[in-house]
Image 1 (cartoon, rainbow, N blue to C red):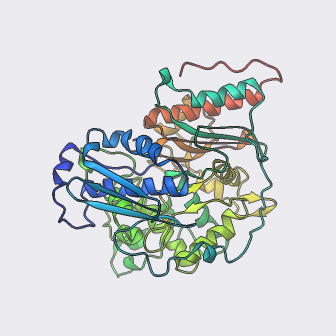
Image 2: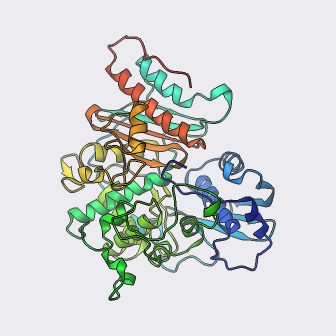
Image 3: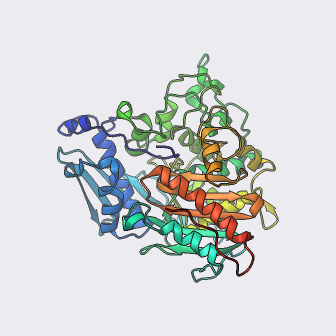
Length: 484
């Protein structure tokens, strides 16, 4: 993989373990990881996004190349009455995910946590006034400039008619207004879509709010109780190290999948551990903090626990905090921030919001953390977030993907037409929120594109063509579109 993402490690020999149904339910067995992935993803897509269960089964499971050749061994069923999804293997390994109104889905093999809040608990503060004005009316905004329409339509075009790109939604915001949008069949203005690893950039914003409030300092050691024993080298890990993926912890790899990562720590954590942060906090230190870049979902999991604890320590506290301090002021009403069994945001993935709401989030960073004249993020936070992290070959700042610097990823994106000042919240399968400050532009694109190189080239091309169209004279010819 070449994108920030959750991955499902799998190898041919892994299914030989399917018969080992007596192994620990918390093992790193690939079969357990697979069933955890399927139950959770299908549950969220059906009950949070409201997608057709058959479509999800075909597009997100059967067509997923990770499971290619092994679908015969995997089963799942959607129980609408119980609002849950069960996934199992022919060997008897099983995972179950259950939906809770307003809270999304939770991988569950036992019972719900006793203090699981309800939607009413989370919304007890009442309506939160939006500081960001409306960016569009109730109807889909069809682009009028020919060049802009061509750019957006091109993002949905399938090569030779084959479902490879699978773009679900594109929203273009220029100067604070939606100027173009398009949705695939089954998706619309009000469909909450999964951001996958774009969620990490939202975790960045929650940290920034606490920094602005004086409750955290990024340069200080991370307040993790498990690391405070005298002589523990993990005491040197700062919040900045965690946000930049430079903690040095043995947290696995959320960026690539290969034979050697068949029992990857990161995938096990997300799909098979009830306490994700607790699992990540137990990881050993394999490199001095700040010396090695390694993209892993354990880092945001630890940060999410810190956020939760700083705002009260319970699920209801962190959800109210996110609603009151971030989502509400941005006018984001339909966001679902999914939690693990301890009431901690998953943080590395599993935030669902409508495409327009994802664009609104991008506008916060486009505006240097200020909306409606009110500062949400501390002064300088966006600059800090988009400052290159040494040794991050993909082009990474602090929770955002960036085009500045001389990294391999930054050069690749610039060569494919994305401006140097652009930065992105980025997730697997092409989930992208691009902010281009010099152009006053935000582009949100969502889909299920398994060809990750194609997904990256597509968003670069969409950004370049959109900028060209916005600069074209009225009535001018659309920009030339290279073969797709």
